Amino acid sequence: MISDKIYEQMKNLVIEVGNIMLEVDYDKLDINEKQGNHNIVTKYDILIQEKLKKELLNLVPNASFIGEEGDNFDLNKEYKFIVDPIDGTMNFSRKLNLSAVSVALLQNNEPIVGICYVPYSHELYEARKGFGAYLNGKKIHVSDKKLKDGIAFCGSSPYYDDLREKSVEILTKFCSIASDYRRLGSAVIEICSVASGKAEVYVELKIMPWDYAAASLILKEAGGIVTTIDGNEINYNEPTSIIASNSIEDYLKYLN
Ligand code: LIP
Figure: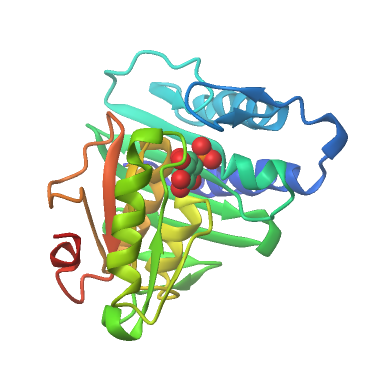
């Protein structure tokens, strides 16, 4: 386990780097294409990841580090950081103000700390394994609504052409039952919204460990459940399908 002092320092660091997104020169984003359709990186993704890597490894020197923007190393240590410097980079590049910083610390491949910060709304979501989940210091819990009275987040896996049709199928199924659906373009914000009872379920066919590692712990500590769309445990080492919900009902039945 990590000390309260280090945990507080981690939170302050995530807020500090998140606020970099509020001071952006949008004419100088230096956008580059990455592997996959419409998958981009800006100089701010790299700047924020480099700062997080340096400072987090100062706080937990014996940890390994995995970040969306590469430069990962030594994946087999007891402690491991999994970091998304800007989740929702496409939103960020278009000034849609729906992006977040996400930092998870894992011990033996299990998340023990999850910190996600949405700078535009100054929302800090946090959880430590066994200590509950909080939004800006207030304890949060998933809703007790059923889907027929609720909101479903349906992700489109935009980087993978072969998943578009199935994504629309799932969207059609969920919005034929739910009171309505939403698509925010940030898995971190969507999962944390379910954790804080703002929606009932989030589903997407393929996202990366840095998109879900921290937010999934926050959701679990808020009383929710996270699995693959086949109902299997997610494993934080590879891309996965995901369904994250308030666990009020078996949402897997809506996927058939
Ligand atoms: C994004 C996720 C989003 C998903 C995109 C991508 P990124 O993360 O937040 O839900 O649809 O494919 O994975 O790439 O902006 O960090």
